[in-house]
Length: 316
Image (tube, rainbow, N blue to C red; front, top):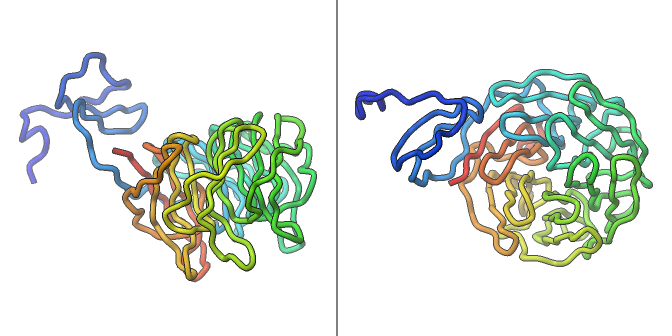
């Protein structure tokens, strides 16, 4: 197949930033973002393979961006931490309290992650830890030990959502970088719910309880109360998410009757739209990034075995 330089008589320019005043059809590679850019054209959204995590992690958590991500905790390596630079994963200092099914501040950057709650073979956890870019430190605990909870926000303004204690939880709690305080209650109590957005504009989607093994329910948070929103196209638990309340992405997970999926849906604050599916269906992986530049790492297959697969999403 002929290369771009053979077709156009030019080589693709490598630039550290997008050029000002680009013309329609101009092509360049942005070495800062790692993206091939074409001005004046719309490219189809797609998932592409990235390099694998060093450790297979099921029911894990993460945050950051497509070129600066972090993944931590997991059912197969409870205190594992790894960092992604857009090309490869590097082992990092571990959590002080290993766990899986923990909540993250899903919109936090790689250098300011938050891990809270979760579960180990000995029971539920209420521990909270902050990552400063080089190590984890213990912080004030959640008021209650929760497992399989969701979360959104940043390290200094985060929310926990749902989970399980000895019953399915409707409570959400807000973290200000020091303390946890009670927030508004979800309309539907559930575990394995996933969140995205910021503290004053968050989303909770999917999840499960008994007798409901999968929920399509979606709720929006305004910093004090929850409002029911447009349901997911498919009832899903253990999905992954990223983005904002008006520009979010919901992908992978477990769907009825008990199958893993690679389905991807975009959310504009009102409606859900179908996006291209990822190549490797899975559940309980770590999501990061934005609706147009997302990262999906690890998770578990239909048999419950953890995987190391990484995929990157580029929006249209």
